[in-house]
Image (cartoon, rainbow, N blue to C red; front, side, top):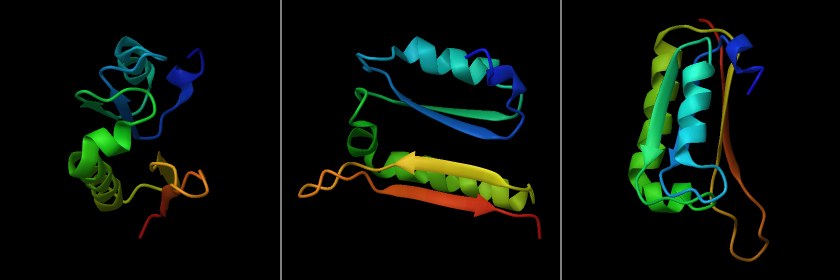
Length: 103
C-alpha cells in the first residue's frame, strides 16, 4: 500500500464486495491511493476467489472497456492482468494479459 502513490499508470481495480480475506474497503483504499487514473469496479456478491465467476460478463466488459480506453488514449507500456477462474482439471489459473503501446 505504501507504494501505491508511486503508481502513475492507469489502473483498473476489481474487487468483490463480499471478500472475506481483503475487505472491499481495502480495494477502495488502494484505488484512492494510486497516483494515476483509476477505474474501480466492485463486483456485488463476489468473495476473494470468485470475482470472475460472480461478475460474469460485467467483469469481462469492465476489463475490455478499460483496455479500450487505454488503447484510445495511446498510452505507453500499460500492462493489465486479470485472473480467470482456475481450470477444472488442472487447477491452473489462466490469465488475460495485454500490453498496450503508443501508435
